[in-house]
Length: 90
Image 1: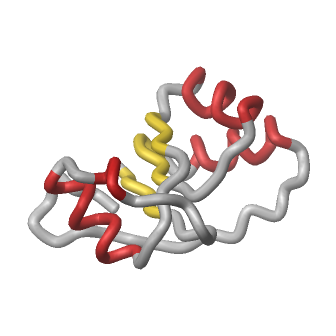
Image 2: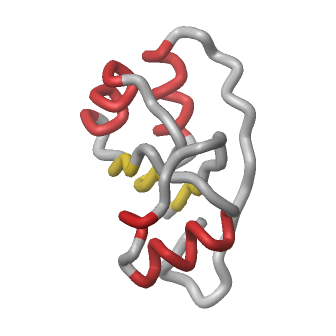
């Protein structure tokens, strides 16, 4: 999702790679600069942040509600219960 444009761009991708380094490279190759997710291992978190991707873990809810909360700066009130992801792509 490109939040700098008037019309956001979103997509979904299935990350089937079991190897965390391959998974982080695949996410990087999507040109993601922000990953909002329900859960992420410490190892994957470190790999993603090392490539310049901002990671906001432990977030749960409907994607539209999460996006609205992010844009309003109120993500702290959401708690992880399932695996929904928002990817912001530049």
